Length: 168
Image 1 (cartoon, rainbow, N blue to C red):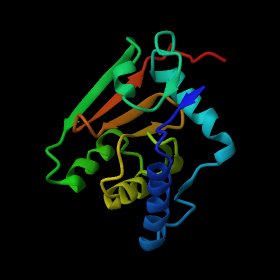
Image 2: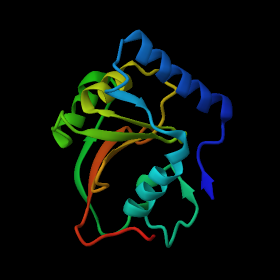
Image 3: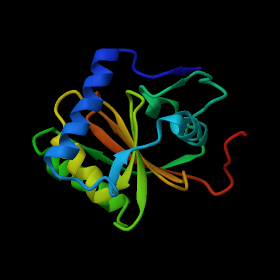
């Protein structure tokens, strides 16, 4: 059972806003696009079971997930923001995911899943308005994640240890 942000109009507005950003910024859809809707649950489930304490928090939720991290997930960096320079704040993403030739998942707390390259992910995030709450950028190997917490004004990078696997 999934518990994504249930405010349907806000959820739809965020998706519409991202679609407008893609069009207005002429972002190549081969470099950033909405992920296959039929596979959202697969990606979100793997994300949740890889990084979060599913034994303690059985219901998959994308809100406040940084409070549900597994004890064996290692924090690699924490970037706080005073919200005065969103562009500079987002530039920190490349410090943790420097490879511009790989694609990543962008998961929004509203339950939307996107796939794209870091440069395009940053472009989209840069143009979003106050509708955006929490977001997560996940490597395709599900071994690294950046969590942006709107309430906490911070971005944290985490890595899973090599021995971890999520349940089948």
